[in-house]
Image 1 (cartoon, rainbow, N blue to C red):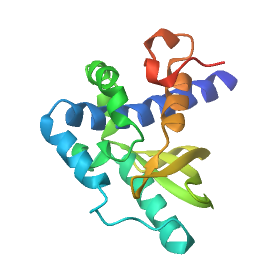
Image 2: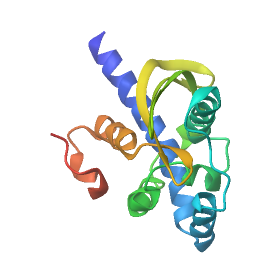
Image 3: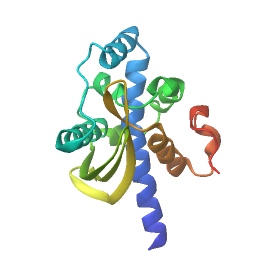
Length: 178
């Protein structure tokens, strides 16, 4: 039973990472992505709220967008904190078999707890083909450049879970797991 749970956790982590990888790779390989990213975080762009029900809704919407394989890749790239730091890693990972899992993956947010001024804790479940494969997961959203983003630490934690002993694969932007 433990082996089954560990394997399921690894599949979930790989699915979540794959969702982000594909999103980042496609956008980081074109000049347009950088223009889109800058426009999305410029002072002229409309800022999202940082408090109250509207902020919680913004975090929930962002989170579910990032973990939705049906959302255009360009839209997901700008929703990962420091996403450009993972571009090389992401490009290499899109050549793996994990890409097929992306289309079936989604997230359902069950709770958002704001931690003003610039963080939020997110409780969520991962669904594959509409069915939950992991429940009550936790992650962090950060507020930067006027919008909510999936925290780099959450992405890196998923990579460490997915790769385990193969930590040499994990990008330098994640640092080393202690």
